[in-house]
Image 1 (cartoon, rainbow, N blue to C red):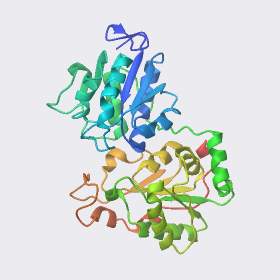
Image 2: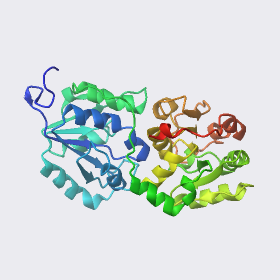
Image 3: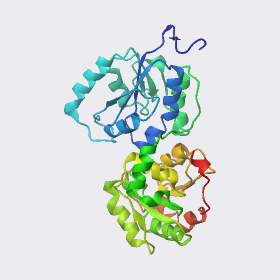
Length: 358
């Protein structure tokens, strides 16, 4: 498509009100940032509304390419949250009242969400579709990619709209207030001593490397002179406690004490992040902080950080990957195959230059 992208589209006036539906968790949403960036730069005069789970409002308010946010109450069959069925009629009425010029289903394959998007009353609806599944506007839907990184998968929808890509970098917008709040919580964050963030949690138990193995890695790094900082949500406090109890060296336990943004400030200044394949891995990728990721069950080609020099992903191929289980019904072979020695061998402790965190 040629001409001024902000002035016309498909022979019609360019969309002025764009909705993007992606009601997923932190890492999933961060992987959508390159697509959101391309949409906003392609149509800079449009108002872009993100429709997501309630937790995502805090992130959406910081993303420069997002103008508004609408909370999604969940829907039967979508596993990311328990659906608030009573709130669905009001949600649909609210969506219809937006009168979106273009509503993008950027949630996934669309098997469940495409009919839902069709009920939202947009002038045009675009997105992904599985073969043989329903689409409200077939010429604006593209096949859901079965391979490739999540960032690239989402950018194929941007390609189909005729908009140029604007890179594949993630963004996690911190400010000085975040850093000041972190310093108030733990002054050692900005001291001279290097520290490592150890994050043993993950949303699904099947994605978690054993806590005692995290402890062994943490002890090895502590022996090299690094302070160990345990991170996680309040719900993961017991898991962090298991790591601390198994360690021989002391650790700073900030599990459940950080906000989304103070966690980001903590990662930003860390020497290293050691974690499962979960949201903090994507924060480290966005901020350029070196990481070692133990991937248990996930599709590595889809979710691993793109920069393989700064971010090391350790994983074991097993017949059951990618995993679809909340809890492993087998012997968790994919996790147990990664030993602490393998993780320790990938780490080093020389200080990271400040320019790398700029």
